Image (cartoon, rainbow, N blue to C red; front, side, top):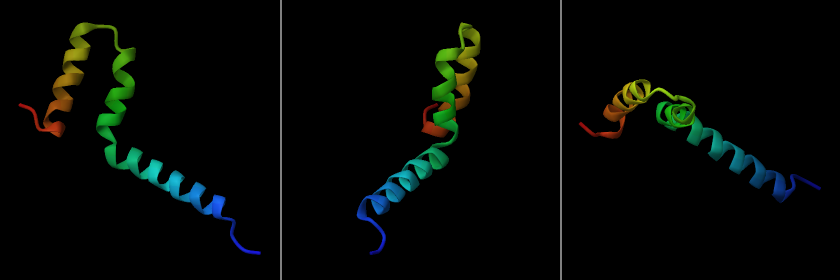
Length: 57
């Protein structure tokens, strides 16, 4: 027949998810790694690196 509607929605959702991951990039990566860092000093360094990208000073 043609392209199934569920396939179209699957492609749209996958594309949107990938764009979110790519465009969020740095903050998303920091958020994923943050729970794995046990040392408080290392967490502070990570937090300081993230601040300029979210507009805090």
